[in-house]
Image (cartoon, rainbow, N blue to C red; front, side, top):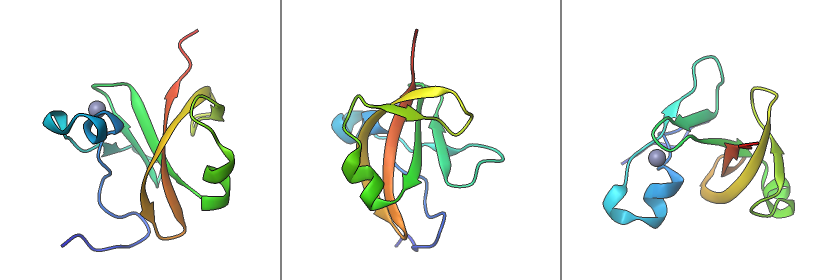
Length: 92
Ligand SMILES: [Zn+2]
């Protein structure tokens, strides 16, 4: 169905993964290859190396693609070269 390449299909939103009735896909962030966002939930996702994902716990600080401080969420689908990691901006 969905072909696997470096960018791949847009990942499911983290919220949709845990609430099957609210399944929806994230959309690519312009100018940031391999980064997706869900404007509805204020979530982001990007592909990180597996070894990196193994070291990151949910709730850990995670530097965002735009240089701001974020918080790591859970991991998602595996992709070539890594795994999807969800994250959100810190609210403070
Ligand atoms: Zn969402």
